[in-house]
Image 1 (tube, rainbow, N blue to C red):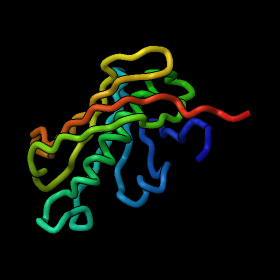
Image 2: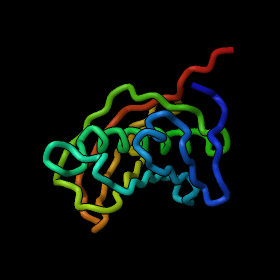
Image 3: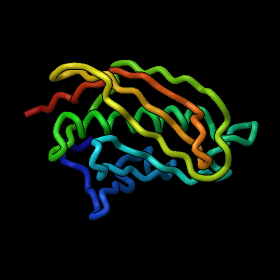
Length: 143
């Protein structure tokens, strides 16, 4: 894992920064003025579970990543420090309808080093399909 700031294009998007992002195929938007990261994924058959709907593990991964990126933006928008999850809980509310899903993070509290962050995952029709809560902090840098 690198401690360098991720490559962000002119639209504020990050593509393929991590192995998980490359494998699953989401795009990360860190360019919004509200400081909330947004991950979007065009759901295909490769993302489904045995029931033919978006796998809960992918939902949780997207929520965790949206929260981590939101924490990085909150800590320092210029350097975007890497964040680690200290705890993370997901609530599955409904099956995602086919199409694009979006995960959004929101800092709800914390201090200088530890943040409390909530996440929401919406399907292409705008329905809330999962939520999360987590505790995050920056990864200690060696050196």
